[in-house]
Image (cartoon, rainbow, N blue to C red):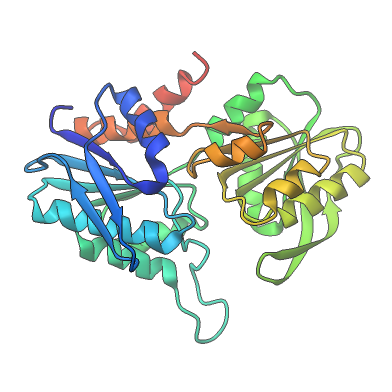
Length: 320
């Protein structure tokens, strides 16, 4: 790994340290400055000439600042003659704007993909994109890594019995089915409608959770309004325990308060978004690190070896 450098930008310092620990290397020296007028400067503290550079940066809130840090960091590396510039973006901001849902709407996730390529990125790595076909927005290698097996392994380790996996809407049925296959469990689907952004109303339940442990799975939890209404419905339908799992704990606004006051048994997410502050407010939440998967990917890229094989090996060692 002598020609590999991993840099952390503002949003993913903890995750980058975890990746470097897995790889057995030091975190690259990099300084991010935010000036009074809002401008950003990324200064590299070591030579990247001929090196394979990996930036670790989720583009969560503040989305635009984090995105600009990444674009500016890429430009700095390109101008300093880095051999390759790889962007590990565990949470890909703007991924929910993946299509024109109404006339005259933008497709902003495609715009972000174009910006990263134009800046000089050679590879992009994401975790559980909102829509997997967004990989096609890139004309450079784009790997979307699933955290589902990390989450499934954690749940298996708990030895839960009589589990039903629940999708919070029809769109998440495939995700729920995949987790159900891992847990050898049936699925149920919450029928809901979304009258406006960040507002969803549960209308009914397709399936049976009476006397069973319900595990709701979604790709992200933002304000937790949808999740909490789903938890309430599942308890009304007779679920004895309700677990909620997701890849991306965005947890905006009232989310932590809603989860704390809900009937949830356990909330489980990954560290694609830094949860250190949320853990202080909600210490009961379980955070699973994706660092072993990201480190396995870097090794596979650097060794020109099978990515799926490297990821399976990392998953096999999850509870060692």
